Image (cartoon, rainbow, N blue to C red):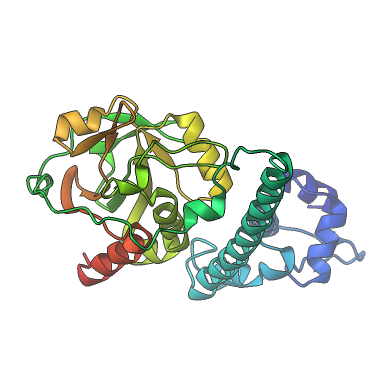
Length: 314
């Protein structure tokens, strides 16, 4: 086929095709009259390059993926070099997210300071305050409220997620799903319940979430098929958390605490609201395989879950 047809079928421009050729990513054969002749294999290569580029992988770094196909693999990411390529880009994105988050926190702090300059009203809590845990934070005690959970069948409950779809908890499959359950995440400009720091196990939801974000790839490599955060906050609130913290996983919402009522999960009262106590469930084949409770300190909990997964491979 001619270059125009290849470009049309692959969803790119002829200029893009010529660029791929200049990098040696595709190599068409030449006809006797000097024209390039492209094949169905070239169509697939160009489509794969386009798909990788849309995920954030520069065209110049797609070679390991294409070489995986050339080696006879069915998928572009069936090779170690392809997985290394994913990890490299993920690490770069993580650095960018962290840099942007830090920049955003600085801007918020400056905005708060400017808005309250000369005022007797104290500025609202910032992102940095949420990420730092007080040294005297009280530790929760193990009251046995989760002892009945390991081995319990997961109820047929569907919860809304920040991906815009429902997640049915009893149908997550044979791979392990890690769901960390927490009371609520604070955010700039939103006051925490009065006395929040003095309630054992209440403070630390944002640091805990950041821990699962930072260990997300490690958790997958250790055998987790999915990771979700879950609280009683609604999906709109959770969407803000996903965007602000740059989370690579979806958050679940259970405003009615249906899961707590069905499974007998521990809860507590704060500022007139009933909230989940902090815990983490590992689900597999429609049952609770393991329950982490109580959780403390929250900012180190993701590493604790990671260690358990590595110590208990399937």
